[in-house]
Length: 630
Image (tube, rainbow, N blue to C red; front, side):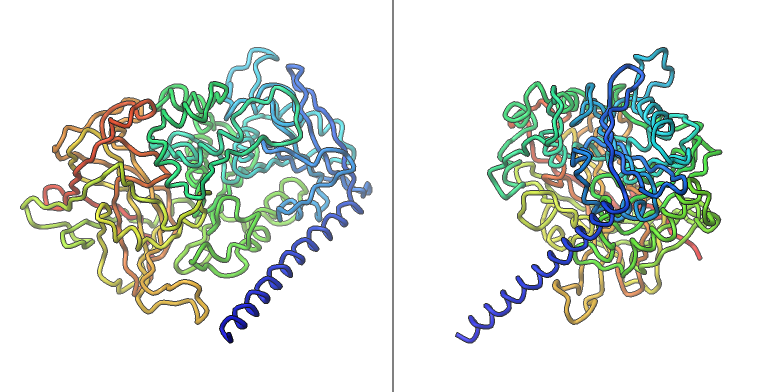
């Protein structure tokens, strides 16, 4: 009876605390809304594009007309609701609230074919380098036309425009940088969609990210022939278990036939372009990042489940292809768009410290835009690369990325599940074997849930290490810190009994057995296996993403690929672990493990594969680590 009474008291206190948090959050939003109402007025306009299409635009203008104000512009496919000049948006995103408090003119626009904008929507609409007339449009030309209208028609603007956006709006921000309008002074692509075949959202290294893409395309991919103020209906899974749902579908062909009709244009295009062909290339923005005029600040999350690849590689591409551009990057320990949503103090069970997002706005984003759009402040303190190093949990600045004092250091797989910086010395053939069964794919996380978690990026991997179809190798306890800053290269020598397979490689920080953050840890952190970075490689693309090749069964073959950059310190007393598996479900679609068209194959095509990972002197598999030297 006492236990029941105590439980009721605890539940009541928990509900009271949750209600108080909700009340405080709502009160803060309401207070911000009241401030905006008292200090801003909203207008809505249809801005004409060069081909006659009109795009719906919401404009928030400071009431203070004693000075000129810069414009902060965001283009979005996700709606600039609420609609109606008397309906003020609840600006929950901390960066937008900061711009409003600093008297920016804040402008949001529905892109072509979305919500209240006219025209036809196209996913990641290709950039047209040589436009021949007003009918040749792209997202860059739409940005140019919108900016041109704003500087001519918005009262009290100072003639300086910045563009910023997160995720898909990050793609539109990158495209804005190509528009060439002289009023556009600064652009910040944040978690930008960049390359939907190599690393963002839809594919990673040619492997189809089925779970995310299915939900996104179902909600977003259906055509909207009429102007609308609302989203369509989300897919009803009739299940709370995504693993079970997608496994029951059997194949991508079944998924397409049952749920994705002919009107789902982009899904159908994905299904009919399995290789990195001209379709994907023309939809990849990085191919066009030359001679960029505005200053660029790229922001991303180290643990961004959607677009981690995009932030790193947009920065690197601009550095390579547009050398005169003032181009900088900031990467923190955030989820997708986490700098605008969270304080960045933790992800799942892993803690990073306080004030991380505040540091970013105070030292990076606001100084950047204030300097270029207001002519205020000192930009000299903003480093080329401002990177948060997890593990030691500290912000670091670098004069370039990756840093020059990085040494590519191979760490070798050995027998007895060990990792060593010493190459295996025995010439006798040595390998570790596992069987990959598509009927029982390795889950990407331990939990049963429906929506893909963001926490999987740092999840405890002990559940996977206990499976027979996941092999692992780990170092002895480290006697000194090892800091990695840059991309990790996987170089495996493998053989498989079939003609294709996926290779999922995970870089893991194994915490000491006695580790804990404090006495109130909600999860046992001793021995925690923190996922630092994981990536999948579809084996048939090992030599070419344009021209896939079958494996010759049982022949030793090299599979070499790159993991997205890391910025992490494996501390003294920890261990480095590598896990290897051949499925990551339902995050990634199942490979039938035969060389065929996965998007149109049948259930009978799925085969078990026996996989060998070699680790002898003649066939020494390794992971090449970007070790930062002091």
